[in-house]
Amino acid sequence: MTSELRTRKQIAHEAGVSVATVSRWVRRGILPAAKPGGATSPLRVERADLAALMRNKKG
Image (cartoon, rainbow, N blue to C red; front, side):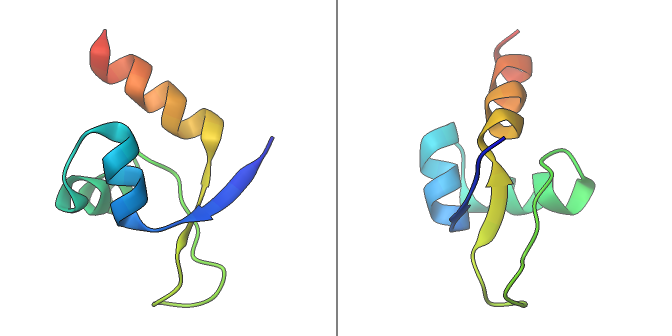
């Protein structure tokens, strides 16, 4: 599986939601994410996890 580093803003844009929603998803464990570089680093999100979340939100 391929993961990539992206900002909350980039993820929000791709998902069509607000940055606050992305933060809430991560905080609640709805969107699995890691911050490998520390608190101010971009998130590492599996592309498949974001795609699955978007499929579930539409259905």
